[in-house]
Structures are given as C-alpha cells and as structure tokens.
Length: 254
Image (cartoon, rainbow, N blue to C red; front, side):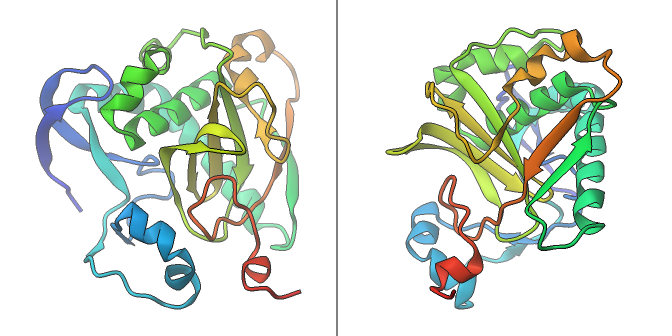
C-alpha cells in the first residue's frame, strides 16, 4: 500500500524536498503488510497494561502497509536501500529462521554470522534510530549522521554503544530517545526478530544484552572462517526501555 509523499526536511541529507515513506525496519525485513495503531506516547505509557493485557482498544484508526515515517528523501532512501538494507534483510531472515525452528522456550541462541557484513548492518541500525527520532536527535548527535552517510566510515565515538537481542514476543518499541535514571540516555527499537539498544554517554555495559559496537570494526575481522554470536531472546510487553519482564511476571503469576 502506497503512503504517498510529503515535503519536509530529510533527516539524512538535511535538505528540504519530497520525502518518501521510510519503512522502519525495512519493508523487506518482515515489514511489508504490518498493521498497527498510532498512539499518543504518554497515554500508551500510562495505560500500557490495559493496552497489552486488558484489550483496551485504541481510538485511532488501524494503519496498514508497514510501520514507518516520512523521514528521508527519495535519494537518501535509495542510498540506504542500495548499501545497507539487503544486509539487514539477510540477517533478519537468518535470525527469524533460527527462532522459528527452535523451541519457543529457548532463551538464547548461538550462531555464525561470518557471512554478514556487520559494518553495513550497524549502519542500517543507526539509520533506524535516526529515522525514528526528531530532527533534534541528529542536531544533538551529528556523528551518527556522518557514520551512516559515509558507507566506508568506521569512525564512531566511544560515547555510542550498540546492543542487540532477539525478539518474537510482546510489542514493538519505537526507537525514540529516552532519558532514564538507571541506564542514562538510551534509544530502543524492537521489531521481530530483533531488538536494538543505542546507549549514549554511559560507560557501563548493559550486561543482559549482547554488545555489537565492535561491528564497526568489521573490516578487521571479516576474513575469519567463523564468527559466532550469542543473542538472548527477550519479550517486550511494555514500552519502557530495557524492560524484559515476562507476561507471567507482569501479571504477578509464578
């Protein structure tokens, strides 16, 4: 289903022009026919339990055709598609197949990612966070913009740390920036089969997640025969960042 075009400021080239609807995550990564509601963030946070477990119906209409925003112009959308999206799609298909072919009660998976261009994958993740946030996000963190725009760049400050997990249970998470007491400044994006966290200016590692910041050094490790990764699988029932409580835990059941 076509979403049309809008005039606005592209979040990648920063020029004002026609914006294309950017599927977040990419359309080819299981986001072609997604149906969803657009909710006020404050209301969703306040009524997370009602929406998740008590069948509270949103007042907004149901959208379809894939989740996304008018974030990038046609040229920048094409740049991402040509350089990064196919790698993201490939990894997403591998991860989804692993989840679906194993016991749903499994909490962690180890598999080989030596045939994935991890630098391109990390750049697509960064593009997702850029697309998901307001222009003030890039004004505050312009280094992320340059990292995505230069397909060969491996330069990214240590202030930015990326984490990853698997997901096939609960709700999507938007990627919006949050300022938390426990973890500092974080963005979290979840859409099956992946969850990603961008941690900003927090030197402490988020222990329950697999850190993938070093994917930016892919050029130094790409010749290895095998590159194993272990990813935990977490549910995301509530919209709060880094809240991975199970349905039983949230409903007070043993």
